[in-house]
Length: 411
Image (cartoon, rainbow, N blue to C red; front, top):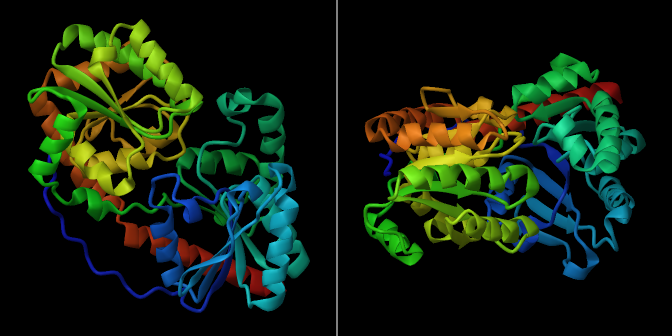
């Protein structure tokens, strides 16, 4: 399904040009590129609007990574930790060295847990303002806590304590904002700002020849109806639910195929392979493997509907990417799904952990191509209007400016 081009207004100059920001991150993807996403590109864009962005990232010593100047305004410091247990101390030591030699205005952390604790230590030691980010639905989320009760139960208490002491907190959905307020974070300190997405990449039409080549590479018949899923094959994405739903779809739509784009070598990926065989749909499921972010538009253009079966989801960048590509979305009604999908207008929401319900929503769109096209067009317009990357980044920079100001007043 192709998308037409939508022009975007020019961005205003960033107010954060004089800021020096220290960020504490949860992974070294920006150095390794393993995620296949746009991590490096996004942080270069943050840094371009700042005086400098110093980014400390958790990195196992076995990766043998070293400090790297990614761009004129971005330096990344891997912790080279012996284990995750030493990360907090490793990161704090690097942060202390930076704060003693560089004029840092604020510290921002990519979660309220281990990186948040590092940020709080920096705030207390150096009197620097603290911004804490939360990219999912964590606080008092019973499903997330039950996933690893001891660890996540501890993280839940730690995260809420850190968030209460932060100067600002950025969350990606209104559900987590409300959970944070109930946890004791003052409402005026919280802002709901989604992850920046290079929307233009998905609004731009894809060359039909590229889509045709992809279809041939995946072994899809010319008239196949394609249900697409993209992501990390991890537990909470609930691939078994999607496969069980697709088994119901396959029985009714002999021309329907399911394409799964993601690393199939995880435990969940291998289990999905086995389950597809057990459900007798292996010949209708294509495991595409990990796809580079630049190659994703062709996958979205290939598909007729996008499906998301997660049991919890903070935001769901893939939902926005699919929408910008002109795809109607069927998503479970997670916090992220409710944040992005306008039920009945840009897509359909289904009950969590209900394969039959998910299948019914998929069937509604596969059985009515006109409705699917209408929802896809509305989804594209909604994505273009609400998820411009430049605007989102400027909102984040504005928040950092406000946070830094709080820190200066408190010194």
